[in-house]
Amino acid sequence: MPTARIYQRPKNAMQSGKARTDRWQLEYEPAEPQRPDPLTGWAGSGDTRGQIRLGFPTMEAAVAYAEREGVAYTVVPAPTKTLKLQSYADNFK
Image (cartoon, rainbow, N blue to C red; front, side):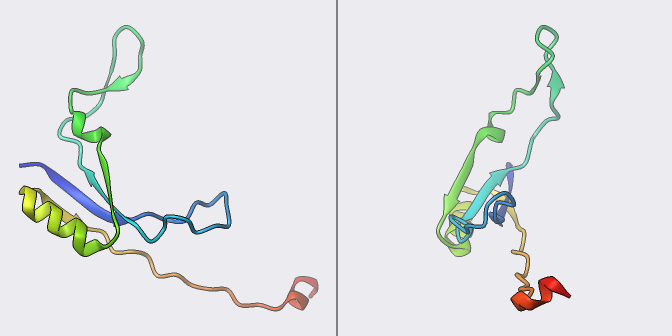
């Protein structure tokens, strides 16, 4: 039985925008470890589920999909967002 994890995408650290951070992802756990290819040295495996990432608008939709398809899942809760409130004058203290 395949296993998956459901999580909310984090904000990109290189940009200030928050696009697509409200969407939830379903990502399959690897069934076998990656091993280096003898010819190229690239890491790979025979497990093609590692290439699949499904997006959902809500956590409930992702859970419903996993239950409907018979996929064991774990939900990774979204981290709490903390705001650092400060005034412009605090930059010059």
